[in-house]
Length: 297
Image (cartoon, rainbow, N blue to C red; front, side, top):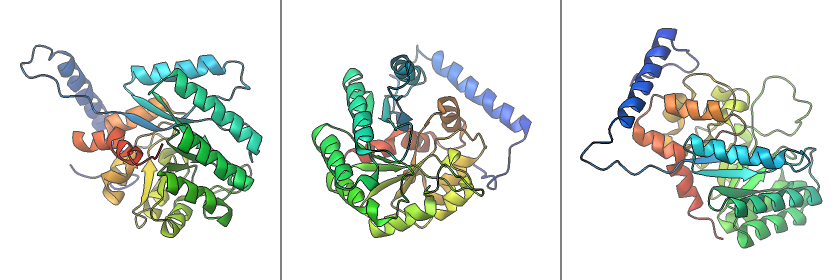
């Protein structure tokens, strides 16, 4: 495969040719029911970055059911979900309420919804206790951190240490922007996550939404020398070649499939990526499944 330079868009002809090839592949698969060999087992597909809806919305239940149903239609087997408070920084009561709703969803959708415990590290011991309870006692798979504090602020360290103790993954909201974000004064980026990883190389850190956090080329470069940080592919930015660039710079074993709030774009990005089927399967679920094996629940 010839790798395009980062940021170079394909021609319309190349895009249409690839789309036609993908469609032809799908038709052939659909027509192959008479084959002598049994079909290969489907690889597990895990969306590592999903959100359920806060219950202050009157349509939360219908929206959550629609999310799970849509995931099933496009072949997503597991959704790793959190619920965030509408206003941040979150209070301890606020994030505990959100996590309780996630637990309810886990029980309603047994095996399909996996829970992230959302906390604000600024809550101190209450945040640490919440992580220990939700992951250690209630089966959550990880911790979700947003932009209440920079990820390398010492106040975050006890939460990271609790997650390490439990073998939990840590999904951190991140982005590198070239303009002010007044609503997110403490947004972390790939560089800060790399700094955190040097302090805690045993932490299972995920840098959130490569394609929804500003300058994705900068993010990839910032993480080249942070081998323990994973990168999820979620986001609404439809730039071509992002997955290929990340594979070339970081290696396929550090990439995780995610949609966040952009499921159509997230799925299409992986289906259209010019990578091997083996590498695609790793990103779509194999890498995340490996991370989840060590969660002590």
